[in-house]
Image 1 (cartoon, rainbow over the protein chains, first blue to last red):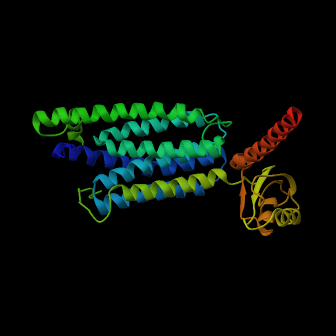
Image 2: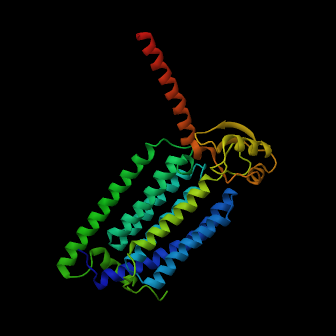
Image 3: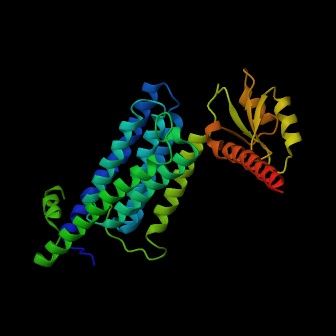
Length: 191
Length: 132
């Protein structure tokens, strides 16, 4: 059961606009990281341009529906994965993982559990597979396989909490005034 | 940014675009993470899978690469490439892939496991003979 009131739609529009800006902002950030670390910049920058372009095209062609929200979630997590790769072997690689948490928290603004699940799947795919075949790409100096199962349930649990709280708020506020949640009302001024 | 209206599109499932993007992005990051870095001391060289160990050995030797060890897959060798253009030489000699050795750790472990299994089997047979 979902509520698709005007205020909720307004909040989702604002979130998509903000995320689009973030995705395009990733491009110069990747360039600066590459220059700072003295690494190749062309591939990371091209990758992030492709992610931002995919999100922009989806937004332009399919509107702000579930498909676009899922694409935004995956593009955002892919961008963070690229940053983690760029910092491979660097002390700050662990710190780059914090950006995963921040990015997932931003997705809560959609008031939709699906982008959160898509983002979690993207992070799990990146961490579990790469931690299995090339640990140094995920954690500095490599890590044992126990690191990811320890890392990911914590993430998934937190996201389940976020998704649960989000759905609960939508249901409660939607039932009360046939519109969006409290967070959506706060987002109204941004539309 | 005048777009973003909620357009209903029922041609394909909503998750399909995101799934395609996820697979493509993961593929790029995995390929970037697994490739051998220029100047790497050790490299896993993957030759065509239908090549036998002998042909893979000859190809690696023709690229002036020192063979460090074999793996569970005959066409996958752990080599020390030549100092000058070692990776290009390996590719010219027929290597399809030049990977970070950590990427094939599972193959090496499998190899080691095989050796361990062999040892265990031998021990079991010896014990069996002693019992008889």
